[in-house]
Length: 138
Length: 341
Image (cartoon, rainbow over all chains, first blue to last red; front, top):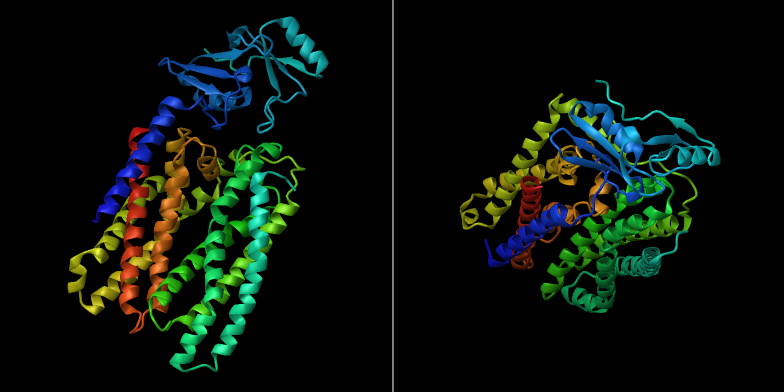
């Protein structure tokens, strides 16, 4: 092989390793279901039994993954849309309304820590309070 | 029409190549008709001198036009935030789907033909009497035809593109169990098609790279003409078979692993979202490596005569080296990602 080919191969290895390093250390969190960016206000974290965490961009994506993998899940953490505070899903109020949080998957489920916030949202955007979509059967 | 820097540059390049390509087509056709009666070597040389500007113009336009292919995907990516519901380029392709499909087919074809023409022109230019001038003119007519179709389609698409409808996410096409990228290999290889595809991907690529390096080695000179033919033809066949194998393996096996999204098979997300930042380099290397095999075939078919043989053989070695390098680099990059991601 000529010197040029060797140099080219070394460069391509460096580029590939750079890509791997970027993916591992620099990239901002992406939805573990569809790969889109995770907006902090709609973030859903699924904590697995091995304590690792999977992040999702919307309730829709998290539920899709949850449905097929509930046996490995420890608990689910959601974000209160009003204050941006992370809470366990069983403590949150979920409202399905006309307001879309993610146009890609048409997610209309909103999360609130306070019952009053949930009711206000439901009234304002013609929604209803729904059950926790992350309920696990014991 | 969506106005941004990508569409403006695309339109500018398309309009320039449409006008100059039209002129080039006319000039090449005229030269070719005149060429039919000009048989003597002196006249051919004189004619080549006259046609120098036409060929120079062709070189410039075709080189610029070749860049329109990657630029097209940059443009599609720039439309993603504008189209309601689009998560990646796939969503954009749902608007004017027939136009996008046509463009996605004609762009690689035009890239291949234009690259082939530029190589043939290089050979002809290196010979003192331009023995391939007539053949190059005929080839230029074909290249101009593709260039004109490509430019018109570009202009039509950019001007008609309006993000007025909501589109679906790529998961509705790429991640469903009945996706074509899974059904076709499953029909051929059965239920365990993913494993078979993965093995085939490495096997075929390694065979192809080995054959390409064999052509570059000194041992190649000791081969008989018959064995040389067998090797070259088998390389061409392996090269063609490699295209669907790589595409299906990428979609079914490699892309989900590299994106760390085990259920997501979208090639557009892989290319354009920056999840795997060097993905365009991997794909680009594979495309150039594969096209280079085809360009070697074009050089063999069109540029082999007594006068141009040394130049053609020298160029063939270079293109061969380029192909071997690109395919090997692409394979190595994919492997590094698979190991470390």
